[in-house]
Length: 575
Image (spheres, rainbow, N blue to C red):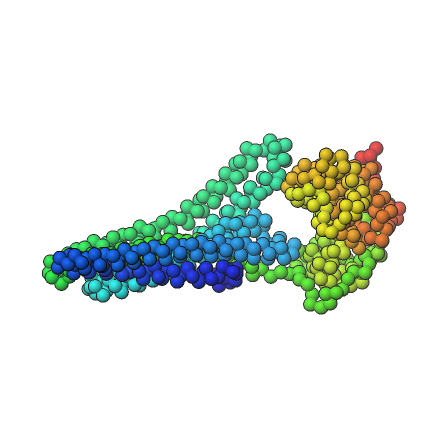
């Protein structure tokens, strides 16, 4: 699984390769220390050879210092490689998410994507660091120490050679059962993150309705769900350490018993037994490492699969291979027998058999009840979604023939949910055109009826907006979003219920500015108020994913019952 993620190492690959080299050097040096110690006891001390003791002791100190140096370097290289891998992995995930179409994003919740880019990457990064360091050290140490122990006394070594397979079977059984539990735990993490995200986004509503206690209880429930699934998973994993310790300490007791008897019988020297026990301790430490790695890999496996799920996600809206130089010459729009479904199936479509034509420069209003398909309709124009059947033409060409950048530069869309970013008003407006002059910015803001309130701020266009534009009103936010869209100088501009928070007088001024200054731009206005679309060239009435009628305000009043009913209900409200 990790093979798919290795390209994320990038320039840190050399550190990932150097780490195992340093680890192997450290292990080799450590392996010879018990052997030298046994020689000091059996040769130097036993024969009273002080010179031999000092010479071999100096060699032990030198080897220990070199082993320490190799250990320090392996730790540093592993940390650099691990941090670099985490950085590359987060970048790869973020870049892939940026390529997602709306339908790709719909497949994963926002909270789940956040968990994958944060907690799952952290788990994977830690597992990677263990693999390049501990996962190399533990097997090399285990094999080397076992060989050295067998070389000292093969009969005594049979004790832990029998024990190791028993432990392996036990650990494998635990891993097989623990993995699905950790998958469930990560899904609960997604739920908890969703609860936190929702609360923070809607914190003003929560406080306005005095629902803090309700939100606390909701969060506690989500946190408890994580806790319960984590305990359920950890219950299995914590068995690995007691099992390992039981087996290994049983081995130690057996070795001490049989080794002592061999010394008494003269078939084993004291130094050899001490060296043998040192190798057994190294084996024990190796198995503890393997147990720890095993726990981390079980946890990280679920995280790795969730990350790969994002990386392998097929992007369903891509540029068509062809003429990348194609440009929209005008703002004409044609819907040719369009059917659309979010599930990409013709059954239960959101839009059915939609056909109409808009000439370049026309102003089109769209009216319809909630769920009638208004937003779904206009989202097909800039290819935020692709049609299920039929085709949408912009400037005489199928939208799928344009590159996404070219098409979306030609189509400016102000979505229902107005989003501003942390930064100054000017920085937000320059999202529409990063090279815009101050005069162009002011012109767009005047057309959107935003200039007056902007200059009323002490900092003017340099006024800093908090995250999401929290320090401006809903109506001001809408006007800033409209101005930002105008900065693109598009062929088509779509206002999806984008003046709902402004008063009718300001709404009228915005529409008048559009008529005066954007006469060559095709304007599509989705609105709930008849007043916002009554002077449009044509009005489309949507009902249940179909076009119920198309006509002018006067024609629809005379011929369409849905339009007339909406108009009359709003006139009563005015009266």
